[in-house]
Image 1 (cartoon, rainbow, N blue to C red):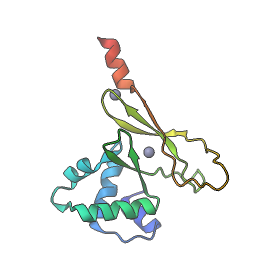
Image 2 (image 1 turned 90 degrees about the vertical axis):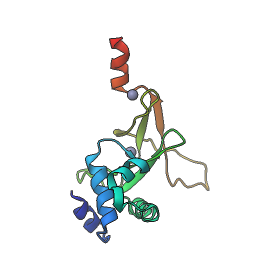
Image 3 (image 1 turned 60 degrees about the horizontal axis):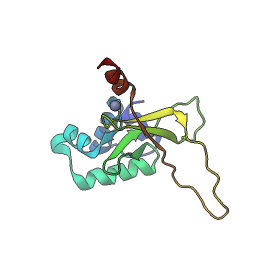
Image 4 (image 1 turned 30 degrees about the vertical axis):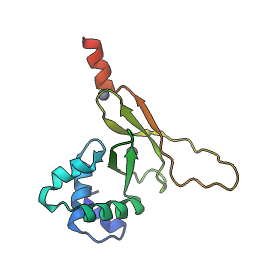
Length: 142
Ligand SMILES: [Zn+2]
Ligand SMILES: [Zn+2]
């Protein structure tokens, strides 16, 4: 799906900021921080518009955010797969403690937690920390 098609699907107006954020998240293999998106957007970047856009895209369920190392917020597109049911399953995020890379592990689904009566889950963030494949290979090469 192109950014235009995504916005059409969610009945959102196709503003330049929405389109460029979606486009950039689509071509990036990994979740991106505000700084990285900022660099990419260059002159068209405006902090207030950026946060408003991110908020709209998150509320619509088009993107999600990841806080893996307590300092940097990263954003990633939700996974579209018409074969799956409508609901987006929360997935595990992986944070490499060596190179600082954050990855969406769409194939690792977060198991639903059963909270005591009277509580309601809104969001469930699971971040697994460790070493990524590349860092393990580098370690072996030494
Ligand atoms: Zn790594
Ligand atoms: Zn993710």
